[in-house]
Image 1: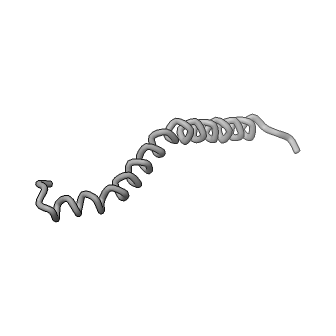
Image 2 (image 1 turned 30 degrees about the horizontal axis):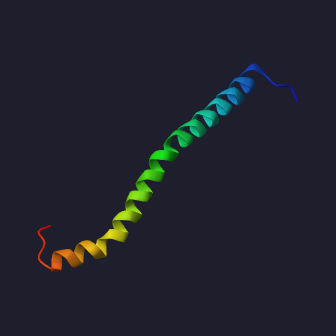
Length: 59
């Protein structure tokens, strides 16, 4: 199989695109982790906040 210039160019672009997507995912991992942590903390505190509001604390 003869690898032409166009085939090599397309393969290189595909590799660079995969690397760029991988780098973007790795850089967003920390932010996504913080979002999920905040979501679960909010879910955990919701019953307490509802109880305090039922007792008459301003919310």
